[in-house]
Image 1 (tube, rainbow, N blue to C red):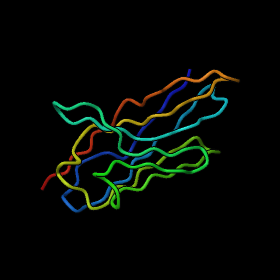
Image 2 (cartoon, one colour):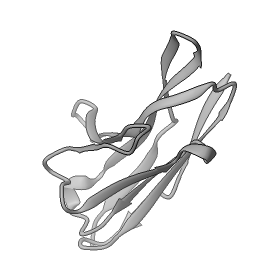
Image 3 (cartoon, helix red, strand yellow):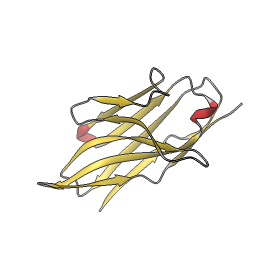
Amino acid sequence: QVQLVESGGGLVQPRGSLRLSCAASGSIFSINNMGWYRQAPGKERELVALISKSGSTNYADSVKGRFTISRDNAKNTVWLQMNSLKPEDTAVYYCYARVQFGILIEDNRWGQGTQVTVSS
């Protein structure tokens, strides 16, 4: 059993900042990609940022230059630093991990989601 526990969401004013955290726990052999997706009301879930085990990153165009993803492999934890937030960043943010359970055994795991609301 693997759990991803998120924290750090909330209400923030435009141009403000928030930092999301996600810690994975359970029977984990290794974690490959970790990242964050988001889903706004009436929209499909979309990629926000991904980070590989080696630290390579990938960002959605809409957040480049404003968001920064980082991770600690020893702690199975990933963070998303969000700066210069805009109302259009309002969404439920989901933590994602590609978990390896053994040799050649991998699966996707998701967190429960944390609400981020950007409003004055």
